[in-house]
Length: 529
Ligand code: FAD
Ligand code: SIN
Image: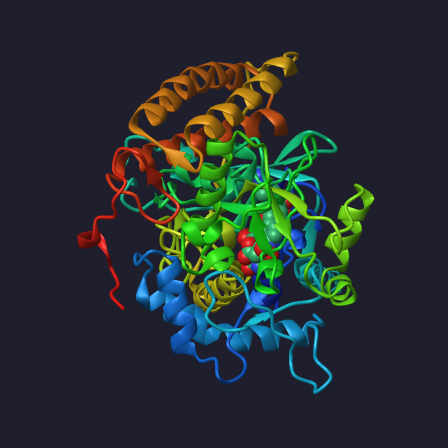
């Protein structure tokens, strides 16, 4: 089956939904989501969205904080673009029906998080992402120009490669014509043809054993673009959130928002010692890379499985008011956060790298855009400043919408795309192989490519992953396509990219810390304060 649209949007988080809403005034849109519209990292966001709203805050401070957190390799033009466009995106969210908490005087109630020099995080209680997702979905469902395809899994983007023109010199001008997408209810692979495709597939957390990300985050978009020979960058910068709730067996790990440290919570060892000042003068509110590494180090030294986050010294009623979701979640496990300390561990949380895009959200593949967590704009450098990612997703969906709409009239659909070919494949009976390989990938990545790395660990990870890669490709070639197998393949591709880029970086910087090159090579800085 074939379906033809002006715009194909893969992903229903903040990036995909807001792009779809913006281009739908000018063309027909297919919006694809591999589960239901609401299962996204966006829905899970707690802390909020960073934007300069009131004095004494200003753009210069937010820009400076972003560069410091990013360990001085953020792209200055991108940082400026995102931060100065933030207020317009907040206005847009409000006009779509998103609600942010306000104080009695009518001003926004701003939170503060690690690495921010001012209170600038707009939020909705402690479930901001859920509120944004809710408002965007209600707009999408009412839009006559948007067709929603839930439980549709994008397998690969379509390029000249699928036209069988292997010997033609197209490699320097790869074009995207749409994507092969599997309808999970019928198992049919549909050929979606589009003038423009937006990759908005989110993060990669499930490449690791412990993650705050929901199950959808398997790096599909990055792997698809990598296989199509698009440019991917900065994959070594995987952000581990310092404080996920220690509750073995729970997947994904429940996040304890950084806003709680902004509110005054402090990290302690199991013996009650406040340890962060040993590592950084900003204490518990140092940027995430520093806090996650400090916790990792304390856990290694003491042999403990977790540290504590302590908010018991704050006024109980205020804590319940600000963090109702966290309060109730912990209480359901017998932890009353107004009286008991919260056991926490770091968890894979966010990927700073991904599909390289320019200032308009264009990838290296013509007619293919990327936005949100699967993209690498250059905003985050070596470490993302808290609550800058929802903002980045919205800004880049916006610039990509403007850029693609401007080219709509001059762009044609390619009609000679072949249907998906699964000749010679059989039903995949061997799910155990997929399940086991998944576990192995997650273990390899967590043990060897986690918060602290070394040449030896990376080499070991690469050798082990190579074996699983070969076995999985063999299985893929002979099996009828399935979501589980595709996700495994994608996770292996992503793991491989993280390892290779980590091996190339001969220094420690931001989220990439290696025992073999513990110093930062400041000659590589792209920004000076
Ligand atoms: P997502 O929201 O993850 O959406 C991805 C979409 O892609 C989903 O619809 C999925 O179904 C779809 N998809 C993926 N693969 C396929 C495929 N093969 N075929 C079809 N569809 C596919 N950031 C902040 O700025 N502030 C915060 O407070 C904050 N808190 C967070 C808390 C948690 C627990 C987590 C996990 C993240 C948090 N983040 C926060 C990060 C932020 O939520 C994400 O970076 C952002 O929401 C990503 O949005 P996105 O649109 O790129 O992707
Ligand atoms: C949090 O609320 O701590 C997460 C914020 C983020 O990931 O930006």
